[in-house]
Length: 84
Image 1 (cartoon, rainbow, N blue to C red):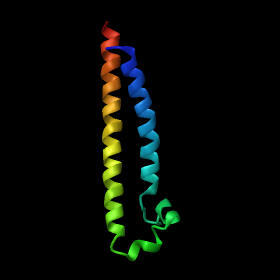
Image 2 (tube, rainbow, N blue to C red; image 1 turned 120 degrees about the horizontal axis):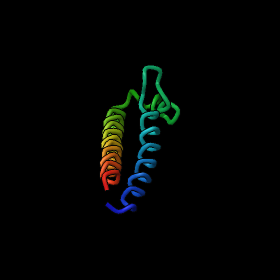
Image 3 (cartoon, helix red, strand yellow; image 1 turned 180 degrees about the horizontal axis):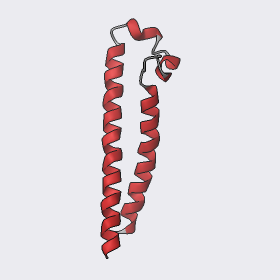
Image 4 (cartoon, rainbow, N blue to C red; image 1 turned 45 degrees about the horizontal axis):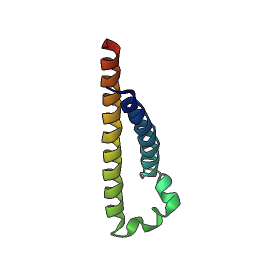
């Protein structure tokens, strides 16, 4: 595989790592989390907040899957580069 493939995976891995960290910090924990800083604690009694939490969950899972695919892809690329 060409070297640009590895560089693309590394850049994607860094971007998804930062996004995943931010998305996880936005989740509401037992104490309210950082999401309450942005108004999540005030509107938690409204019906629309559950939709926002579900969308945040979906985005976190999606970014986590892309992050995992980058890890696996980079590991496979390193394995193939090692044998050649």
